[in-house]
Image (cartoon, rainbow, N blue to C red; front, top):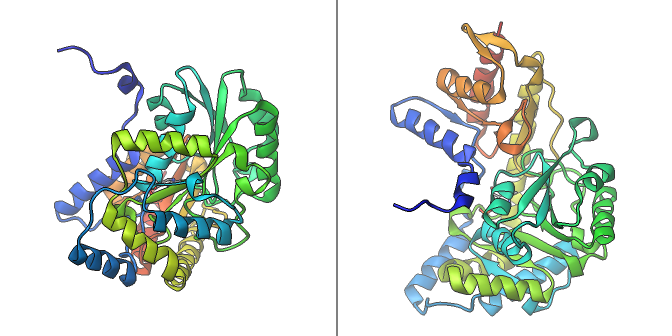
Length: 395
Ligand SMILES: Cc1ncc(COP(=O)(O)O)c(C=O)c1O
C-alpha cells in the first residue's frame, strides 16, 4: 500500500489520552485509581441544559443548521462576548463549532499556508503544536519561565518572529499553569503582533473559571481586527461531550472558517446547539456555583501538596489544574529504578501508587506534572496522600 501522509509522521499521539487509557485499563483490572489526569469536570451539565436537549429531541426538527450555527445561538454568544469580555461582534463575525478544538483548528487552517510559522507559548495545551503541524505550518515554541510566573516576555517572542510568522496562540486562563495573563502581558503581546502584523488566536475557554484576579480578552485591547477569540461550553458548563465551541473574529476569517466547517462537519450538533442557548441565557448561577466548587477543590489540593516536604506549588488563579515542579525530585530512585524524567515519574506514580497525572513533557514543560482538581474532595485527599507516600519513598 502507498504511504500515509507525511504530516501524520510528524504528529505525536496525545499523551493525555495515553495516560488516561492506561489508568482506565488499571481501573478495569479492579485497581482503585485516582484520576488527576483528565481535563474535564466530573459532574454533568446543569439540569436546564439537559432538559432543553430532551425537549428538543421530543419536538423534532433537528436537521442541519447553517454552518456558522443557529442564529439564536450566535446571538446568545454575541451577548456573552459583550457582557463578559467587552467584545462587540456582529452576528457574521461569530461562528459555532464542534467544541473549541474545532474553532482552533479551523482558525489555524484559515490562516496558515504550508511553511508559515505560529508562535506557541510553553507550557502549552497539548493540541496547539499538533494542530499547527496538521495545517502544514511550523510551531515556534517560546518557553515562559516559572520564575516569571509562566508569562512570556517580549524579548522571547521577538526572538522567534521571522518573515514566515503568521500568528501567535495565547491561552488565558492557562492550561496547564492556571495563570491568568495580566493586562500588561496582553498589551505586550498585542504590540508584538501589531509590530509584525501577526494574527492572534486567543483561547479563553477557562474565562469563567477564575478564582483570583481579572480575566481580560486580548481583543479588547484594540486588537479586534487581528484576533480570533475562542471559547465554548465544554469547561464552564460541564459540557465536554456535547461538543459546542464558538469563535468571534474578523469577518473574512470567520467566513473562511465557516467554509471549512461547511465542507468538513457541516455544523455543530443541532440538539446541543439548542441546549447551549439555554445554557448561555439561563445558567449563570449554576456556572457560578460550579466555579465555587472548583475553588474549594483547588484550595484543598494546593494545601495538601504544599504540606509535602520538597513540594511548593503556587496557587493557580484560574482553570482547574495545578502544575507541580518536580525538577528537584528527578534523578532520585524509586525502588531501585531511576526517576530521571517527569514521564518516568508519572508512569511509576500511576503503576505503583495508582495516581494518574500528566507529565510536563506533554506541555513542553519537562520537570513538571499537571494535576487536575476537577474531581471531588475524597479523591483529592486520597490521591495527594498517595502522592506524598510516593515522594517520601524516593531515595
Ligand atoms: C486550553 C484548551 N483549549 C481548548 C480545549 C478544547 O475544548 P473543547 O472540548 O471545547 O474542544 C481544551 C480542552 O481541554 C483546553 O484545555
